[in-house]
Amino acid sequence: MENCCSCGCNEASDKKVLVEYLYLDINTCDRCIGTDAVLDEVMKILTPVFRLAGYEVIYNKIEMKTAEIAIKHQFISSPTIRVNGNDICQTVSENSCGCCAEISGTDVDCRVFEYNGESYEVPPKEMLANAILKAVFVQEKRERSCMDYELPDNLKQFFNGKKNKKCSCGSNCC
Image (cartoon, rainbow, N blue to C red; front, side):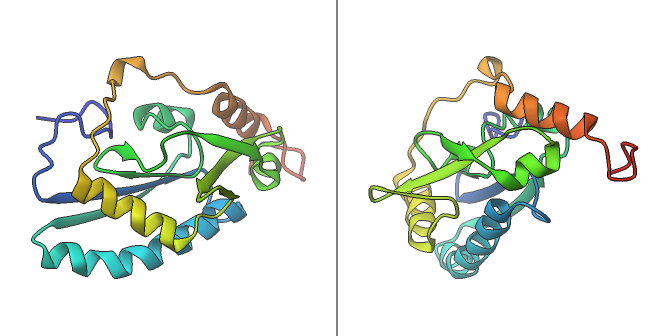
């Protein structure tokens, strides 16, 4: 059965660890670049552990190049890390992201990771390792509905700004 989206709602998750990294830009955005590097480090450590425990590990990185891709993946905030279809963060906290504002030419808020009473624009390794392990072995299942998703206004603004932003040469080539 084909999935209607990336939430995993039609997949059996027996002995499977699907880690998805969803982001706006890993070439310019410091948050996305930093989170990508930390997640790579954590996955290098955890992947052999999961395999030893008999799990199939799938690690995908998905750039939200367009609003259509963001809608397909029910993207809420950048960056997002999901394990077996569930966001590792319980809530979405955001603050102003200068890098993404530069990309889109509009004010953009991006994700801030909350951990042990602190806020981080790039999550600590310990936070990611704990969240991924908890998602797999505690198997927190949060209800997600494919029908209830709407692209957040903040992301609509980002994609519209990015589409309409003029390059330094005066065209929309960038």
